Image (cartoon, rainbow, N blue to C red):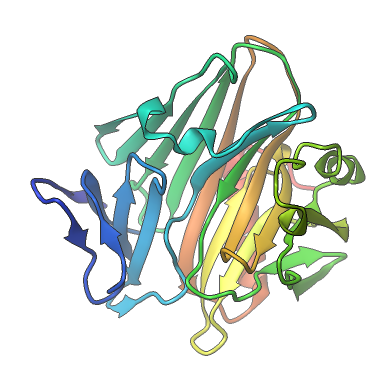
Amino acid sequence: MEIIALILGLSCVNAGADTPNLILEPPVYEFQCGGMRGFIRPVGTYHGLVISGYQNQPITKSGLCTLNLEHYVCADAHGQFLPRKKHLQQYRTEGQSVTIVFSATDEWKVETSLKYDFSSAEYISALFTFRFGADYRGFEAFVASYMQQPTPPLVRTGGLWIRLQPEQGWQMFLAKTKTHAEMVMDGRWSWFPETLRPKVVDGTYDLPVLVTRDDETGYALIQMADPRECMGLSPNTFAPAHDLSLVGHDVKSGDEVSVPIRLYYRKIDSMTEVEDLYNQFRKDLGIPEE
């Protein structure tokens, strides 16, 4: 589907009846893709997607922004809100995609590109590519997706789909492995207010998938990440947000790590449907069946 238009020449643009309290400062692109419609901010603190509707219906679960690159952290350093700094961001459009480039700094020698692609009729793709100019121990890129309401996401762990209910005031963390769970507590989040720091959930995730479902309508916002480069799933209620922690391993200067993300919004009657979508995602990435 086509990116519809670049909204220009206005000091602010109201997103309309679907999101009456949301003000978008230019530059802003409007899109329709996979039945979804909305806006993309290519620069600024809240860069990312704002999904405002599906087919002819407004969306009530999407919030301030989706797939927003928020922090860089590692075992002995943190880049608090560094990727959100506007002066580090540049963007370009090409065909049916918008790419944001986040420049490296003296403190964080990481250049990141984030490409949002709207060419599929079924979903939105995002590709994070990190290029490292220094060594980092246990590098983690924290990607935030804000919701309008503190509805707990559905995750699969221990063979079951459960609602991962964040405790009030805590950033919950469901890790890929025990090693990743230990990384969360290695001091990388020591800059966070003590009551908001990640709290590790028992167990590990089965799938790197977050499902934000409206049980009244059955419609769900589904985020899925490349399992090779997703160290954990991390919701909270204080934002509220359903977040992804990407990479989660040591990197060396000169390394490049890419992490594909796929985003759906559709009616889900059975969680088997989500698993089928995820399995197709794995197949498209060329990951062998387990």
